[in-house]
Length: 235
Image 1 (tube, rainbow, N blue to C red):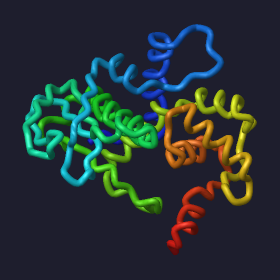
Image 2: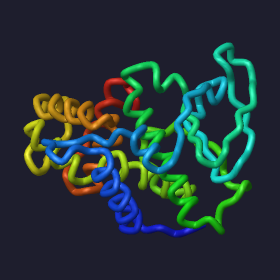
Image 3: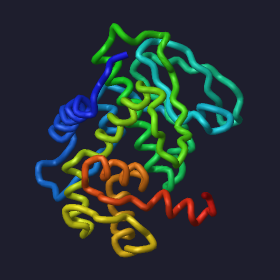
Image 4: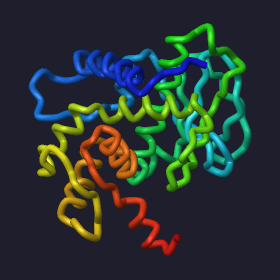
């Protein structure tokens, strides 16, 4: 497995996003959000929405090689689907509800990231590689990374979905300035509302955007998860 640093990943994403801006964006724009369907098309990938599991745990699936995988029809009966090495499968329910747009976009970005890494290191990956990704995540951040392949895909997905310049432009438009000191519904409700508007503008979930802003040094303190746990009564 290739060992990519965060700087390596940012450089890969920057090249892809530069191509995306030249190919898909008008010259005059106030800000932009990455359209993941357009990005996948630019990369020569086809996105197909199907039911990927009977319990909703599998949200995305792809492969660098030709392989048949098991999916489900609308009656939740098993069926076979042929992955041709250039197709991304996304859970169909993510495309049916507006509240799932952030998760849908990140899932597409994650599978695009896998394909990009496959292409960069073709000798490393083959039909023995993992074909699907289970996106159920604990709210609690992991102290130790257990799956570096998935970490790399997640990190590259965040960089593709939320480029630095897109976030900074959106912060300016939404009235958040150059840096947020704290993200809190309880202590800074106005800024929280502006942050939510920014997440909608960028087509990202609140958690994905807040983590990305923390990583880029654009958010000093993130109370999003702690406050959500408090509302649920979770220790």
